[in-house]
Image (cartoon, rainbow, N blue to C red; front, side, top):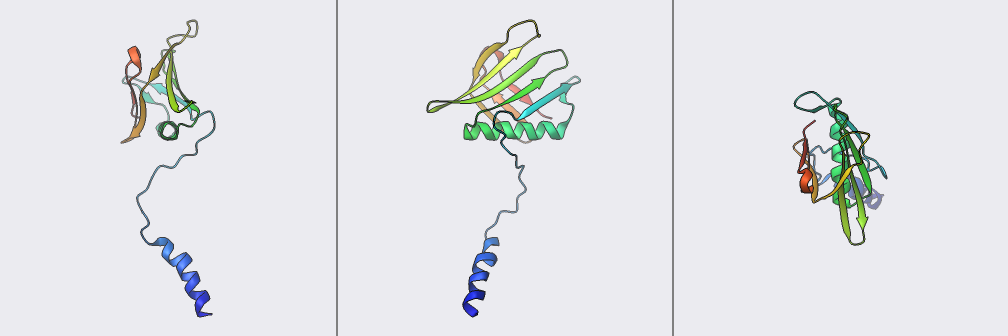
Length: 136
């Protein structure tokens, strides 16, 4: 009986040792889509800040894992930006498709990196389209 008690204590009691109590934003990585963020106002802000934070964190986390997914940003002036991640052999391809209006083809460029820090989505190195920074 004592051995059983010790085993239970080891399994459950020690599980809390060294645990990190820092809250983190956990997001499920849906295959293929982290969502859509609608922007409004001047300066541009997300219409739904919580949904934008979740979608942004999802996308940055997918980039870290090179998991295929996309994130769409809709601006009030009919500009659409779609960021996508795809594994390309041993490398991870991060792209932005920028469409100024529905009647024109999108400009597609490769980007260098994506991260979500301090509640801000930062996508950098997108060729002539520049960096994309969104604080919901």
